[in-house]
Image (tube, rainbow, N blue to C red):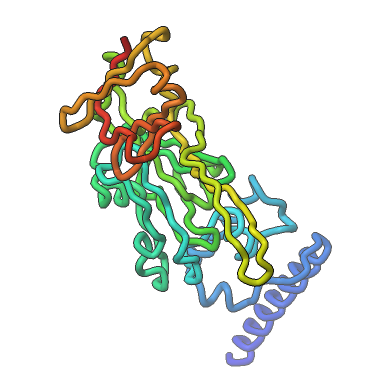
Length: 309
């Protein structure tokens, strides 16, 4: 009897060996350079292997088969959840209709970056910054790339993640083109409109997402006499401020004076010449009327109402 069992076992092993050889030949003919380790099927659960295979199959919609699937493929294209050596001196601007606009360092957003799966849900991040309700959130990068998202399209899969270029956005439920890299600015458009321009209610968040321009302010010529050769060398310093130009926002294009009211109720009267080139921007956590021909001390902060006459 034991001889019969041994014969059956030997036959089974022979069949398995033939199958392995045939599979190897087929893989070689198909161009495979290496076979998966046999222990893969015994160490990892089949459900996990099936899930990974499905992920690779979906990745083929964007990547060539001969270029993937490596760690670098995903990390370079989409960011990673684990990247401990991010530049902590990098910052992100929180602007628009945040209750407290600020410049935030990455180590304040990701304090536990050394831990696995470091990430923060975008909507949770906004709630942590006091934004409970909003109409849209825009993520922007220095190269001009940006994505605007509405709350209805954001799930808990929409996360901010640390990476070598600072911070990235990823959302499994959104198209991959929304997965922005190198985020340096987050602009929120809130549900409230605390700013009125000739009777039209708006907010600084809405204005910053509309047409904007930049002006040069506070230019100054500086010089230094070198203690080494006695030569005097000069330079010119200035600041560039971006915001929404005021004149296109006014209902009366032929205005002769502009009345501006701030949050304390104080009213300012500007002539057309005074208001030339004026911008509305966000500074010091408030909506500010920038007057390029004046120093910062004479700009109007905490603007809530503009009326052209």
